[in-house]
Image (tube, rainbow, N blue to C red; front, side, top):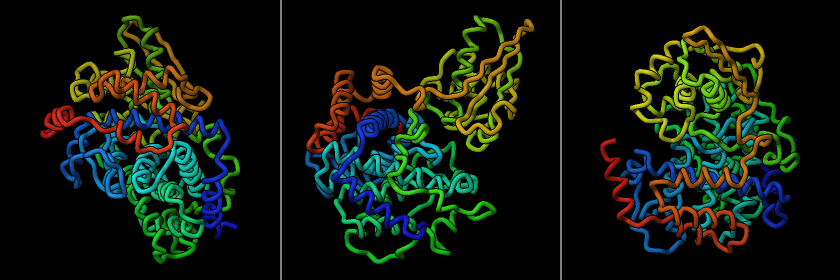
Length: 472
């Protein structure tokens, strides 16, 4: 029954710690973990990294991993595991290159991977343990979403943070080897840690949500380990999570969540999607369509652009005339303009110079974004880009499904190429390649401490980056 979902989920998580999951589920989880560590590296170059290092209490990393010491990734610093989780989570989501999950409409790995890393400082965690906990955390993301979305998202909640706090609690409790009763306690406690508003999209606070969710989930698990008292049915209580976070005409339908572990979320078509572009996932089909039109243009100048999208696209894509690189990540007009003019959208597309450049600003002014009847109700952001050139020619490309979805999953080479691109300027090429190989060999690791030590970066490199970001 719906009222016992957290209890059922706790039983599922406790059992999964020993029984594990099918090989395909483990492989997708491994890909998600690998991809996310690369995204954390990319986030290290962003101004928010230096700000967080100065704001969060930390100390020089001296090589030991323990209950009071977790690595603040790609820096020379260490912190309490909870503080390291904030830092690593914010970096993971900093450039919006990290994966996503539907129907949660959330960035799952940016919450779960920092949780795994910090939990591995508080308990001995093998690579296989981490993979199993990742699958459990993603399962919680998806099941909550099936009962609460899309109303939850439409109400303005950032599900990465709200669902993510409870998912992180599940993963952390599992890695701390709590019994089922205490795992249930962690889930119930986590409902009172959950928050995160979509008002912050396009700002540094959006990626911070991922770190806060990881931190809060770990804290909930730590309290549960001490049998800290809480409600036993905080999900479906009349004043519980599902009711309070889903106010409005479309109430939560907890029966739609199904049983934990049935139709594993990570094995569904959209349960985990990698990203080919460093921007909001709703921009990706449009970017690909624009790059295809760019090849057709062959040097001709676009006069007008029409972007046809589903209704859903207007919810996250809130910046129609972006003024900053972060706003550009949530502007389909900017992303399409860059694809049309440059033929590609990469990490270095999102700079102040490119967002403000006259050719981009001018083309955005001649661009219309509207609902396309062909894709009005599409849940996966199918997008059409139609261009009329100055000589009167017209061409359109419609992309129904983004690269990185299950139907268009990354090859090993594509995953490695993205990973190394994310690490550029943060790690030397040989170190980045070595880190990638460690991650791909994660199932054979006896302890994630090995991985944490590879995330440490010598002080000279770290100080150079942080000095450059002080004024940002």
